[in-house]
Image (cartoon, rainbow, N blue to C red; front, side):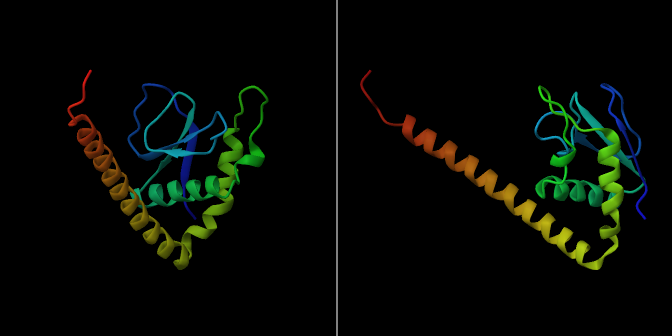
Length: 139
């Protein structure tokens, strides 16, 4: 069983354990993040492997829209800390399966590839911009 601690993030506080953040307000409630924001929870774990596994589990819960049924509020949607904790605890049983680890490794490779493509796209846009500005046009 994975052991983790989840609580509300306080601005300016630093954490000694391995941690990540989960957004708790807005329509993207449940979104895992590496950097804190004003409206988020912090999930602390003992090891970096647990942190990565829980981070990706939270991403899977977000992508499969599991958090949506727990979002409350009409003007500013939000999610309760206990709901996030319950969802993570109920789904940690899947982390020990060998199939999960294989998929997690594949997911990390896909994320690396995605980052590479984003960098190539950014460089291509910059090249296009430079080429367009290089034309001598009358003003």
